[in-house]
Amino acid sequence: MHGRRSHSLLLMKSKISTKDIATGGISAALSFLFATGAVYIDALTITLSVLSAAALMLPLSRGRYVGGLLAYAATSGLLMLTASPLKSLPYVVIFGGYTLFCCITEDKKWNKIVVYALKVLWINAALALFYFGTKTLVINFDKLGFELKYGYLAVLTTALGIIYDFALRYLYRMVKSLKERYLEKSAPSDMQN
Image (cartoon, rainbow, N blue to C red; front, side, top):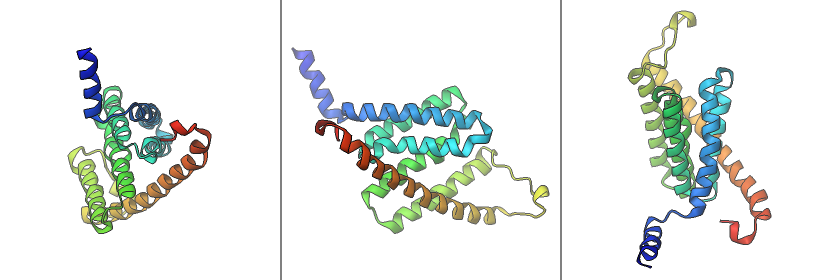
């Protein structure tokens, strides 16, 4: 009897519902599948990376932020174990981490100036990580025929990052709309949230 009561107290304190675990598990499985494909199938890297971000949006679109966080953590950890820490960085930093941040700030309606400042900071920190930290972002300037200084690259990356942010938020609104249109109509009333 005592063990059962302490177990229910533990569940009450943790605030992780079975729905968070279920939606997080489904999201993690899909996100991991797409992110792994992005690592190993060069021709589909961008497409599969965006699909991994969309899969992460599934629990977030239902307001299940804990489920989204669990999915992100599980996908990131599994990807680091199966691919490599270096190959998993695009998911960890951009397609997973940035997606999580973007969707939560979209729902919470925080101060837009602060949010965009944080997003620009995130984009430039990711550029610095890939360019200086891991040296995985390598641009062959000889083939381009011109020299591109890091400052110009940062401006270009910021502009592309803002475009990606708009596209990501649009995709998130589409996922939420599809969820409202199809999932909530077909689910029994006790399953809707």
